[in-house]
Amino acid sequence: MRIRLCLAALSLVGGAGVATLATPTASAAACTDVDVVAARGTFEPGTLGFIVGDPVYSALQRKISGKTLSSYKVNYPADLSLTSAAQGNADLVNHVNQQAAACPNQRFILVGYSQGANVVDNSLGISSEGAVVGSPIVATLPAAVEPRVAAVLLFGNPIRALGKSVTGVYQSRTIDFCATGDPVCQSGGTDVGAHLGYTANADAAAAFAAGKV
Image 1 (cartoon, helix red, strand yellow):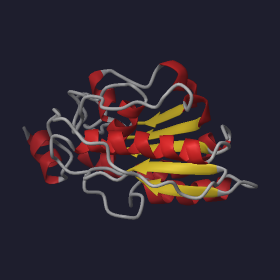
Image 2 (tube, rainbow, N blue to C red; image 1 turned 135 degrees about the vertical axis):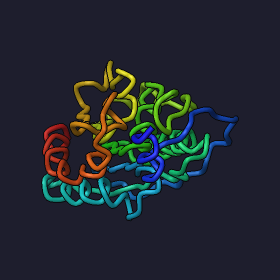
Image 3 (cartoon, rainbow, N blue to C red; image 1 turned 120 degrees about the vertical axis):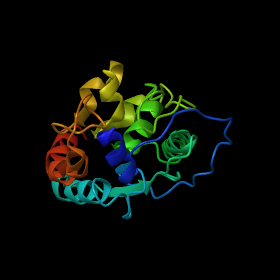
Image 4 (tube, rainbow, N blue to C red; image 1 turned 120 degrees about the horizontal axis):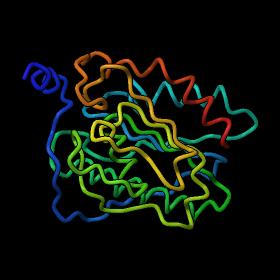
């Protein structure tokens, strides 16, 4: 009960379930070499996300030389509503599809933290239903786009607490950080503060991605 209350206080808990959603509109951006698509955590402030997205993007700019980078903040509520993660799932897939069509040589790095990791999981075809702030899959990246996803960077991924992870064609391109004791991604975890410390993994994540692009 104590863990549940702490999670609620940090806005890290929520149910799953989804109603029928209209596909959001995402506009194509510049045709850079690499588009970093970031899904922030629940109620996380910052441009791409104060804890993960912003520091990871800064680290990627340092680690990836000789290539142009752009960023996209997944357009979704990132709140505790039942359709939040599903809206993010739809927007991420729509954005990547539009970019892939407009920019034939562009590659993608997907970044997801907490609920944002659920958004990315769903987009890869791995359901986050039943996880903290999860949802059923509403859209997946098509097979034609899959080779252009250079790296997947996940932090505090709630499906880990269900014993799940990214498998299949994306597995070798995925790094998935779960801090010891983080109750969002570790079943039985009790260290709520661990879920807020993933800024420390930004450089490692960027180095991993730099080796993939």
